[in-house]
Length: 498
Image (cartoon, rainbow, N blue to C red; front, side, top):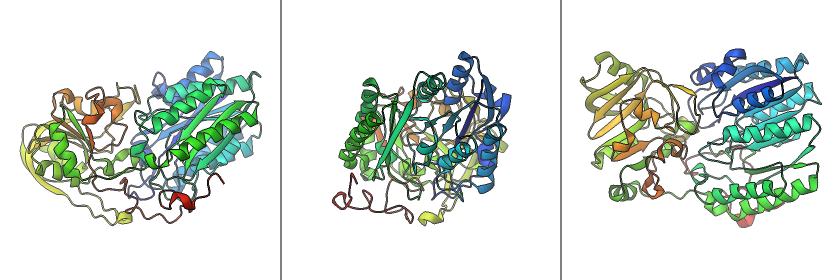
């Protein structure tokens, strides 16, 4: 057998001014053929699990594309079409016997609102009988086109996503069982009309902990796979909602019953899926009393959801609060990083840091912060993830430097990076365990690398700042979202289940 393994992943933020062109993918992951297999073999990524399964079954791997970009604005039309052409080329040629796909679920292109659904629809149109399985990120928004055209689908059950390899192994085995006649996967799906917020989807917290446990319970009772997908709130598309997908072995009624049980539990938890804002100054006062290192989260400017990583509002507030021994990651400012590389370690200088980007979709202009300080370290920004998320994946933040000012050490990068792994500090000369405070532009993924440094979640604090990854629905001007939907509309006005 010859099996296609491909990855096309992007979490699209409709409000982000960051362009999603080919360079955006090249900056994080764009691999083809044998080079792609070499880049991901041995990692905890879905592609690596697919490779292992193929080899265990004596199959040849065909890998036309493994591509992923940090979240940003709408994917450019030419990029989307090129990726689809590369992935579909061996399908058109009739040279593959099955497809094992690692997709995100929240990709929106300039001309296609459901990027993953359209890809798999095209694949099914070319090859009506091709066995197809898919892994999805937990932050999926789907039209249903994907479910209609695949054989078996599963989503991550953890956030941070430390189970990517595990779920791919699970759904990949389901597809192999279908290929070899041991299983007949059938799917059911549905949506609860909720725009859930990412800060309320951590699987160490309620309600997502209970919802994901419920998917495991359904699998223990016989489902081949059961998935709750929280959705991604920063995209303006009609198909928002918390999605449930169940896969049964030949029993559609059982799949539908499991789906309905999960959807009912999601709807019951709707209020818990909404983040409630708080006064940043109150959070800082609490942080001063918390055990070290207290972790502070500038979540409204999170690269991992499409943020620009250069909004200085929260950094300025922390400096004004007089906190000492703060490690901050990251500010993306290529010009500032270049200036620090030019003067070198130990040099003192004044910088206009951050504020590089205007965000017209939310009416926010870039505002740099003038700071005087010292260059603590300079690096090439290249390191390998050793923590539990993206384990083994090479990182490149471009020319990177640490700027020390007013009790804070700021990691300044030339390329966007969400600090989910402690390596972003340790590889730049900062020991996170020895810091009093750690300030991160992240939401939940940071827990993969930093919760071992501070296991007590009561010492983790959200600081509500500014940026295109805000959790404030009043800032995001939704124009395409179908209505009614919670919390934009009162629950009593929503006919659910319909």
